[in-house]
Amino acid sequence: MTATAQRSTRQRDVISRVLDTAEGPLGVAEVLERAQSDLPGLGIATVYRTLKLLTDQGRIHPVTLDGETLYEASGRGHHHHFSCTSCGKVFTLHTCPVALPRGTVYPGGFIVEAHEVTLYGRCPQCAAPQA
Image (cartoon, rainbow, N blue to C red; front, side, top):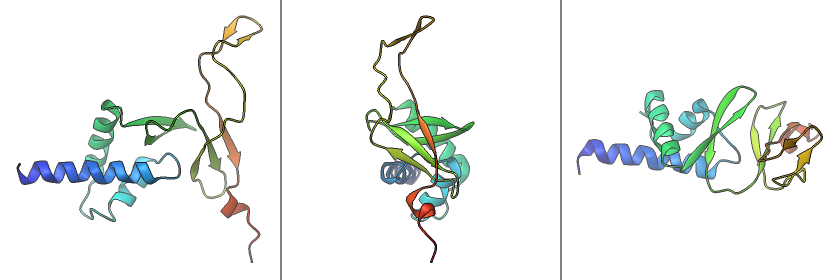
């Protein structure tokens, strides 16, 4: 295996690990910053290429919040997000705050196929009283 192939694999592994261990979906800049702690020379173009590759492989998927594309690991089941209005972090909620089963029919003939919920407010750290 060539040095380039090993380097490329290491980059994918580091970026995958960053997303696997994140508390919620991350933007490209956050992925870059976190991955650079293991790979200081990592560039933004490599992050974009790797995110596309991991998305194409189904290992991660994009999440659009407030017009920004974030990325998170796939396979986490049905979940929603909480966006902190103070610090800007996005967290994964492991419970569903609404009961909307697939096939629910709303007045006017709207048939639910899926739903996404993002709650907004202050995360526990931002909501804690400041000493």
